[in-house]
Length: 128
Ligand SMILES: [Zn+2]
Ligand SMILES: [Zn+2]
Image (cartoon, rainbow, N blue to C red; front, top):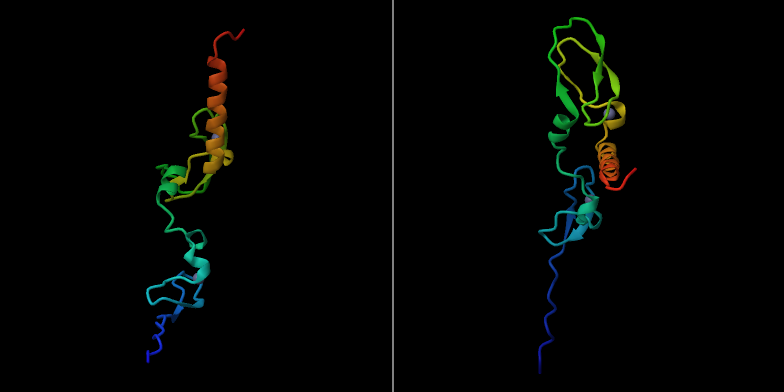
């Protein structure tokens, strides 16, 4: 007589999702870290915001103003002549580099793309 085959027990445990702010309980392997929703990396928060974006969007403006003043700056975007007014505060030296239109990386990319297209069109031979 054969012994009934021993059914392998699944080592499933009640776990708590490691995603910050989620805390959902789920049944998973002992090594599982995330609930089914956050097992998908797309649903997880991005790792810390990079310092990069601060540097890319801002500039250091050294000044000795002791009052709040409004100063017109030129947009640092190549090809953009927009001025924008910046409120300069005493003892604050980091200010945006771009006009309102180009403060957003996506819009800057669009602007560059449009400019490249324009340049390509102008460089095309045979143009009257
Ligand atoms: Zn979760
Ligand atoms: Zn601009």
